[in-house]
Length: 249
Image 1 (cartoon, rainbow, N blue to C red):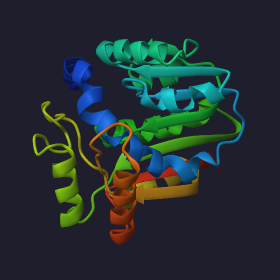
Image 2 (cartoon, rainbow, N blue to C red):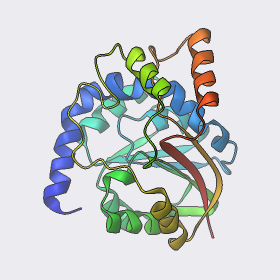
Image 3 (cartoon, helix red, strand yellow):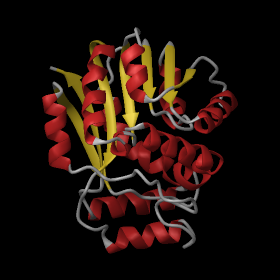
């Protein structure tokens, strides 16, 4: 990503940081958990984790208690400020938060990690930069470590029932992005090209999960809403979000 694009992306994420959890993360935190649940069983050692593109810290909130050391990296100062606030509110004071773009951090980092997560980040990067990040992550992984990725992929249109659910869950006031401007650099990945890029970078898929992006009316939906979501997902297999747990060749 050239300097102009990087600056535009930083300004975008700084500008939405104080709205991001309310409009994007909290309506999806339950379904993100569904997406990642079966991949978490494949985590190996639990000494250290690195979250690339940590945003407001939702993956650190989910996993950092399981690790002795945790590091979150993001290029947006606004997002990191919200991440620190969220982590402190949860009593998680040990994660280290660093401001950096991913290529610069990966090039300079001397530490090694048992888990590297990079969720909802790679589709913001240009293809060459994406390939380089996937290659450079190998050098930061401890032996037998794992990488957790999740990205939107190009697919058929959303099933009507899923679209209707999301519109109702969000009160009909906002779509999947919310009441914030659309990210100028956001573009779902072509799945075949992404898998080929992973293979070229020397990654093997240990486990995978996919589902339709779905929202809830509350951060912690009640039993009835959870049951409806599970039923909709069962009735409409596949999805536009693909999560992968990887190990190095």
